[in-house]
Image (cartoon, rainbow, N blue to C red):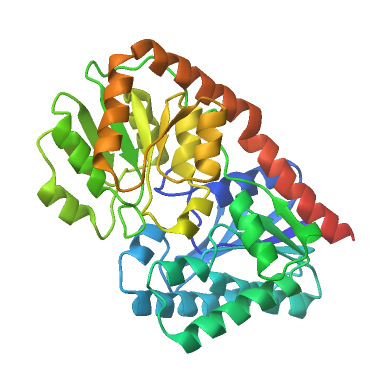
Length: 381
């Protein structure tokens, strides 16, 4: 089977950010399929058997894309969609098209290539667009909102199948008009070979965060919690438009080393930590996220602290793999961290549960196989 894979932010383990498209594509290749990846960044190359067609236009990493104003971001997304369309229409003819968002504009080259080659489109929804920018206050124009919602409904109707990354995203896609029978749930995954529970090396109790530091990531309460816990070390690794502001306000026990240089650097931080944070701004749509950092935490065998009351809370509480804290509440965060610090045996037990959960439900091999099964089904149908 020949798969045309469209994803603006294609990142390998040597880079920084989500590696889902790379991890899936290389597993598809290992099963004997041909994969052509259209992504941002100039130049064509081959990566572990994946034919990578880089096109100019737009940003090649999500952190840079979210670090600019919304109008500028939308312009960059549109520029990439046009360049990706031209590349996708060149051929060779695929058997199936796999387009992944965000942004929602990734659907445009997918739809046009699907019509050009008369092959099915599988559209993957990683975040609910346009609901996320609407609730975040970034998409304010009523005409723009109506246009974005119309595009969303059109894409879901024209896709042979939709892959959703969380139960909340699945429900949102169905609410927007996709037939429930066409929506498959394939969440983000844990890289069990890269993240491991190895013995924690840090002597001081360490709370880690790794990921984007943007508007959607509510990290100010971490600084408040750190002020209440001067004996606890907090490491916030990442970059984004809020990083400098956080650095200026951070107390002495908070370290901001900057962006990770590779996925391996993130794994090293997770291994050195006592507990890891998955935090978002208190906006309802963000509770539907399927964040890489949460599954990396599970794979590393570390307790996860989450602040979204939804499936993330359900995951950590039902499996005793972490703790829930109220969004935006530094005192609750400090209280939960203090409890973990004072109960090292519970930290170890919860960490073992987290690793077991990763192995049981979020193994990358199994989830890649589930996505591949969807592609094979529509290609053969």
